Length: 298
Length: 257
Image (cartoon, rainbow over all chains, first blue to last red; front, side, top):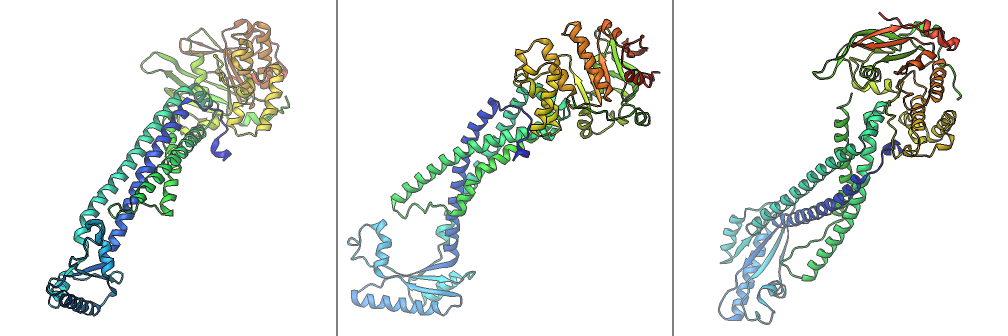
C-alpha cells in the first residue's frame, strides 16, 4: 500500500473532493443501470429456459351434455398424453387440474366463482429433456388427429417479442453503464488536469530533482483511486438502498404481470465491484493524463 | 555533517569529466542564439564560477547541465553520458546526481523547511527516519535548527535561500549548480554560503556557481567561465584563498578551447 501511495508530498487538493462527489453520483447511476441490465438478463435467461424446455398442449373442451362432454374431453386428454409420452426426449407430462387452471385464469377473469360454469380447455404441461427440440407443427398435426382443436404452444411466439424487447432494454442499460464510465473518465482527466495545474510548480521541482514520471503519476493515481473508492462506496450504498426499495415495492404488487426483480449473489458481487472498477478507471485515466503532461518536459 | 570523500584525484583522472560541452549551441524557438558553439569541460571535483551580464545566458547554460532542456546542436555529456541523445527515461537518475540552487529558490509553500529539504531524499526513496536525521543535521549546519518546521513564507529571504541550498546539497550531488545563490543575502552570509559550496567541493562535488557578484568571485580562488555574446571565455583564478584541495581541483581542470 505504501508503494502505491507514493511518499511524494503532493497535497490532496479541491480537485479530488469534487472527483469524490462526481464518482459517488456516477457509481450510483452505474449500479442502477447495471442492476437493471442484470435483472433483465436474468429474466431473459428464465424465459429462454421456459421456451426451450417446455410445451403446453391445450385440449379444447367438448360441447354437449356436460357429463358426456367432460368424459370425451378427458378421453382426448388421455389420448394426447399417451401420444406425447411415446415421443423420445420427453422428461415429464403433467395434466393440470381444474383448480390449477382456474387459478391461472383468476388474474385475468376474476374469482373462480365467476368462471365456474365456463367450459375450460384442459392443459397438458410437457417438460423436455435438456437440449431436445420438437417439431411443433408436426406434433400439432398428429395430435389434431386424435383430439380435435388441440393446440400445441411452445411459448416461442408469445415470448419472442418480449425477449427482443428485454434484450433491447438490457443493451440500453449496458450502453448507459458505458456512457457513465466514459463521463467518469473524462471527469477524472479534467480533475487531474486541474490538480496538475494547481501543483505544477511542485511537479516541475520534483521532476528537476530526479523524480521518475511513474513516481509522480503514482501519487495522483492514489489520490484519484481514493476519491473514486470513497465516493463510489457511498454511491453503491445509496444505489443498493434504492434497489432494495424498488424490489420490495415490486414484490408487494403480487401480480404475474411484473416479473421477478430479485438479484442473485453473483449479481450483487458484480454491483459491489462497480466502485472498484471506478477506482481502476480513475487510476488508468489519471496515469494517462499525468504521464502525458510530464512527457512535455524533458 | 558526517560526509566522507567518495573519490580520490587519481580515480578522477581516469573518469570522464563531470560536464563536457562540445560545440553546443542553444536558442529558443526562432529567437537569437543564447549559446553559440561553445566547448568546455568541468573535471570531476572542480570548482568554477560562471559570470556574465544579466541575460548573457548563464541560467540557460545551467539549465542544460541540469537537464531541463537539450542543446539545439552540439553534444553535452554528463559523466560521459551523451545527454543530448540519451533516452528520456535515463535522465531522472542523472538529475539526482545534480544539485541545483534555483535563483528563485522554488521552495514549496505548503511544506516546512524540513520537508522542502527532504524532497530529494524522498525522491530517492529513503526511509522517513533516515530522512529526518540527515535533514536535521544539515539544517542545523546552515543555521536553521530553530526554523525546521517553519513554512517558507515565514522565513526571511536569506533563510529561504539557505533552505534552497540545503535542498540542493542534501543528497551530496556529484555536480552542484547554483544560480545567483547569494543574490538575497548580505556579503557575510554570502561568503558563508560559498564556503559551504567549497566544503562540498572538498568532498568531491563538482561546483559551478553562476553569479554577477564580481567582488565575491574575487575572494575565492577559482577559475571563472565568462559568458559574453553567446560565447564562453575562461578567466584564470586570481591569487587565492581556497583550500589546497580546491586548488588541486582547479589545476586539474578547465580545459577550455
